[in-house]
Length: 157
Image (cartoon, rainbow, N blue to C red; front, top):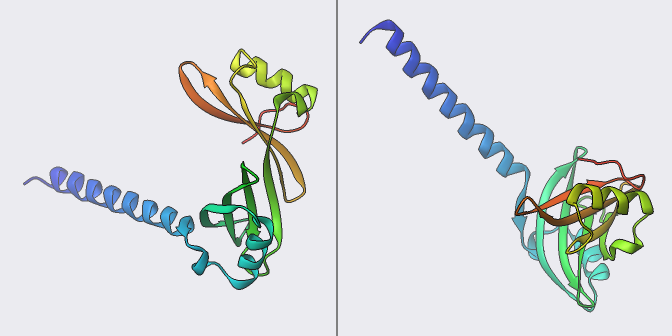
């Protein structure tokens, strides 16, 4: 084997190893958990917020340097989402379904411009860390996509 071939093979192996390591790190930062695995303070908050409903999924992740739980639940027949701090159970955010006509006019206008229609759109109003956003899901170019707008209708993350 020539030196160039060995160098190429070594570089390829290192690249694959790094990719695998990074994928592993990503999965360590965000993973599904059961209610039994949730901290006691967070469990109390989740039970309070979902009383009369049921928890569908809990994902533990790190946001803004803190361990949090992203909780999806069905309460009163509606899909709800909650963001709960692991350490103290603080409710950091909520997402609730709303009708498009309940969103601010700039959000409605931006959604119609982005999707080309107002039909078939699902809207979630979220408040996380004191900031409001609107997640809108609908058909675009033959696919179902989701886009986030701030209250002024500016496209977000």
